[in-house]
Length: 233
Image (cartoon, rainbow, N blue to C red; front, side, top):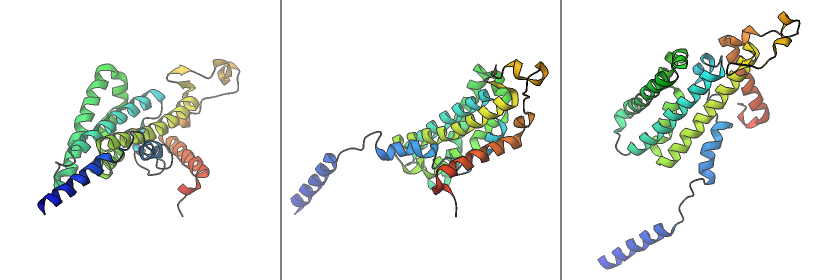
């Protein structure tokens, strides 16, 4: 009887081994990358991470640096939490996640101070606030704790890119229309300005926080007009 049971277990193991492994970029895995860019965007659909979208999008360069910082923290944080998911006691999981994110943010902060000090001063407290970014904590709690390392990595990358493109889109319009520049380089010719006999004047209102909210609102409106599934009943 024991021999029969052993043979059945061996047969089950062989069947498991013969099952094809999921490709690294299978349809499900690609969805982890694609969904946050549109249908499940963390800012425009989940309405998370709005504070930084309002505060640091006056110029493109700080928005780009913040996007890269969040990309690193989210991808690395998801991987680390996923690796430890079977060893984290349920009662202290939030504390562990905060420690992981805080360590990564401290590393990012020191790198910014070492290599782009001016941008680090401009971003100020907002780098530290990455620790409590709802997008990052939400993905760690909802996804990384229950999925494999590769899936968690893709989820982190996808949500970080979804966050980044909104930040960069808002910063693009605010800097261009508010200052006439992109990444600090003059885009609108001097001859176009009223002071030089032209017809154009920079819109100072674009540099104020309310205009960031209005710009995000316009993006949300366009997104829902193109994809009616996102419209709440």
